[in-house]
Image (cartoon, helix red, strand yellow):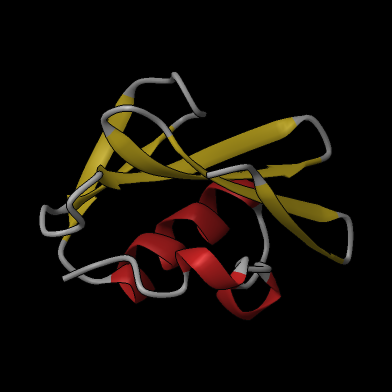
Length: 91
């Protein structure tokens, strides 16, 4: 699968699948945060400091992971653009 992107108010989100995981990366003003899930889509979501960054926390729900990402980027969760293929992440 190729990378899909979405933007909103200076925030860019990119979604892609690697050999092992689904990866949603957000970038804003030089800061980034990522949400990762195993490729099968049944494991907890990992919030990281970036695509290859350190894991910060794990969540069952996508909304909770997005809340944390928004906090890391200094925006409200509703400001985060989510590309369509990533909309079903979480348990």
